[in-house]
Image 1 (cartoon, rainbow, N blue to C red):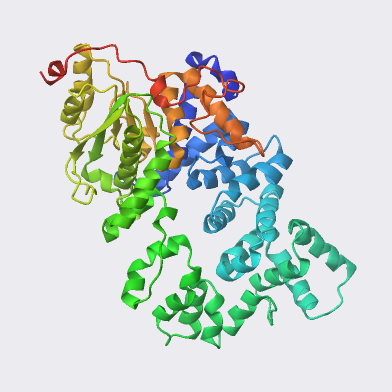
Image 2 (image 1 turned 180 degrees about the vertical axis):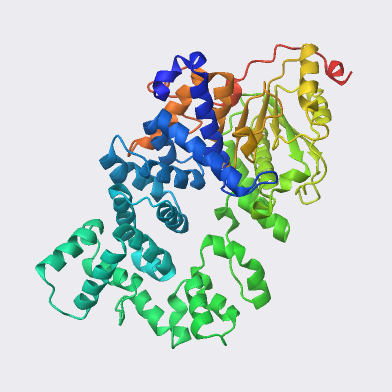
Length: 553
């Protein structure tokens, strides 16, 4: 069965629609970490089941979504493992095209963590080996990777080649570098295992980098490799190395050198993530490390603000990110009431402390920007639990009690209510559903949707405050297209499936332009007219003209 075959029969295939919905929740909401209520193992079990069921339902669509831009990197990693660990209908295409595109969207550490996941799962078929060797040996950054990720690269190559072949290749490379003449069978082995994956890169450079990664003795001619070996005896020779590489050499060979000196020597080559993470260390060491806050996503900026305090520079970067996200958030010329959860559980677990509330704040900002840019729409916000402080941050506190807040926002007469909550109502449990049922009895039909910044393993996806409310998971604003698709899937399954089919096709075809929210419904040549431009256009119109005082009574 495929998504295309389900589209016109969604009512008759509710289990298939639920499978797709659960996968979308995992793809946009699972981080692989524990939450306030679930352990990491419980979350991982949910992820594995959701990925396996979606791949079994429609492998091509599943592959397209994994390769596309809207899923989390965690979903991309899990998806590649799923595809490589199960038989493929197109093994050549998966290895040479789709999976390479999926891996290309990962950062280098996450790519190498993916290969560690393959090793842990004993996934070592021809497709897996080809993927590992092509993405590592064909990289133009192989020299830099070799000094920065030496151990992880060695582990990945060992998994691809096997311990015995690694030993043979290392021996051949040592002899080659010593100027010895290689036998024809040795040249053929190097060509088969290394050269054919180098994608036109210099044979000599690739061979030297592989020899270094596999622990072959020097001397080396490449600048970074030579600096690595020289820095063992001359610390200053390591000034061209990445921060973590020089720090490792300091700890092993130069313990008397202060850690601050490593930061001073390498500050110009710090990654964006390191620049943000090492601000406190830099201040203590008296080293100035420049940070361009516009390079970070809104969630990460909020986490930084919680740790270091909100500054004008961070606030400006957040406003810029909100405007960017608002471009994909068409409010459909409506008045939106945000009902935001600031309760204690939104602090998350130690592994992802404050991430749920950071996601909520980032989403709030995107809605504000979308409403502020349109004279025909407005956005209001109402919090339950914690409240915003003077710096605009919300520190999670108190119980999850959204029912009274729902009455308050409905009294404002909005066109739609967007609840952002983990769904763990506890003051008391079930009161939100009772309240919504009561106002429905008054004839008030204002649409309500729920967005969840965490998954609930015991619910098999996200935890809904009430069954009738469409709900979707969200971890980053770049996933709004899939979020819209997920919400529409609850309200209008056929329409949601058409949206998903388009997104999956765009992600699964090389060179095809990726579909954004503005594309859906705008291109009459390729998109069905019934596909909405945003989730809000898919929601039913509010048939009630009840006065606000009827709600408050």
